[in-house]
Image: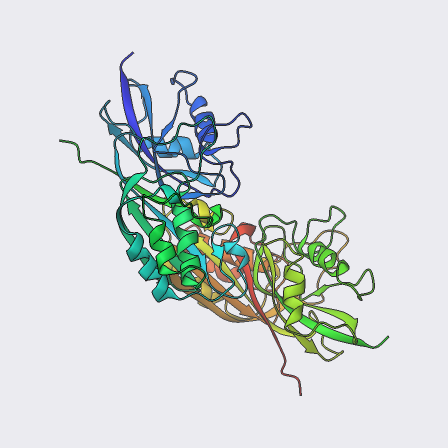
Length: 259
Length: 259
């Protein structure tokens, strides 16, 4: 059977789901996508969806990327895929786009860069519509200090202090060095502050641990030398600050241009 | 027991709830507020919350108003009320403000004007974060025609064609004449269009029926004479267009200034 590989861009509200990765319970993004696929005629049963990476329970996405292989004679083109899938998915998961890609494209291994955003809410009472979608910061926070912390963390570092363990069934990453190429702080209307992180890859819970640490620094609970020592690979420190899942969004995944 | 009347301003995401009004099932906004009250020491058990009006299942509020009576010696002031209640409420219901009011204030009967907004989404694929929070319009819509329909409907009219029956246990309203003082159409970023309606009062489902009718007109499915005949009190017409609950928000309730 000749196969066509398809690249999908997917957005989701993570609040009702147990994360990206398939689980026995079945209520994950991958499970819902595979259930939608199983209703499409002409696809072999058990067709798998390969994501660019897992997102944790409660984490959202504006632009998660995944790929699947489908028989080349399947009568669904790039325009028809989103429509066919969205008709079978819950409204809180949407396939935004589909693109035919070469067989050597891999949603995870071909990724060159990812961008995550983390949303903070600084107002007094959290609007109901933002519940589970931002981190509500109750104490005052110095935005200048937050920017400064971002600039300290930016660059190629050993980020092992900002990595959680995935559990005993997951091997530790080969290296904990990552190139955090961009950290931006954007003030939005309605008391929202958005932290944006771009890197060649992220360790497990890295964005939430970076955010938690930056917020502590911006609240005066952590000194600059404490912050810098977390980046010192001779130290065996681990940050204890981890921002909640609900404020985190996978914004997009970039791929090397194909030659 | 001497009582103090308190006026609350309340915001909620209506999606998870069975509307405002208390029900045997218990999952309504009023039920959750009364459950929160029942945990506050010093309040007589069974203290009732009186809303400015019912909102249907799935309808949201930025500024619903309600009142309660509490013993005058209760040690909660205007600042402490929202905090005490929000600590006991789900995150999708927030008390924004509390204000001590005279005993003759009534959330429903003292209201002089209400404003509702209705949110339309005009883009191709509905972002997951807007699911249950807007009405997704798939076919093209003429914004100029929508504004024109709004201007036709504005004013004092018999709106009986825009009223649904509440059911056999609710008596019909004494009059179906209402003064729709303002209809505004606001174009927002991200493909959203917001319709705002202000009146001295609204009939049951009136905003959803006005919106549904205006959208039909703006899609060329209803002529101007059809629209105008719905306002003719000699006719026995009823609009069959009713916009879904999820796009509707009670924005605020105004009261006569107290002399």
